[in-house]
Length: 139
Image (cartoon, rainbow, N blue to C red; front, side):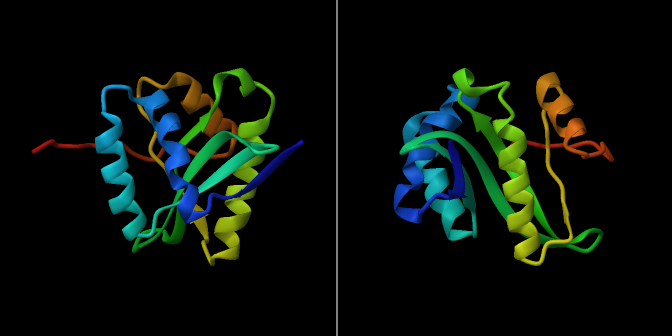
C-alpha cells in the first residue's frame, strides 16, 4: 500500500538522495544549499511512501505566467529503480495534479531533457504535449 502526501518541511532533506540519482555530479552540500533556497521561494515536494519508506518524489512549483495562468510545474519526478514499472509514477501524478487543482491551478507544464526518452514517453502517456524547447545559458 502506497501513500501520497506533501513531504513535511522538516523532512525535506530526505529528497536529496533522489536528486543524486538524477545527477551525481553535484555534491550533496550544493544540493542542500539549493534546496534551502528553493524552499524559501515556494518549492514543495510530494512523496510516495511505502509504510515509512520514501520511494518516490515529485517537486512542485506553483507559478503564474501570462500565457498559461496559474499552473503547476512538476519537477524532478523520481521513483526508486526497484519500484518502477508498477504504476506508482502515474498514481503520483494523479495526486500532484489533484493537488494543483486544489490550489487553483488551471494547467501543468514541465521540462524534460532531450536525452530522457523514457521521461518523454511517460509525459506523453500522462497527456502532456510538446510545445517548445527549453534553452539555458550558463554564466
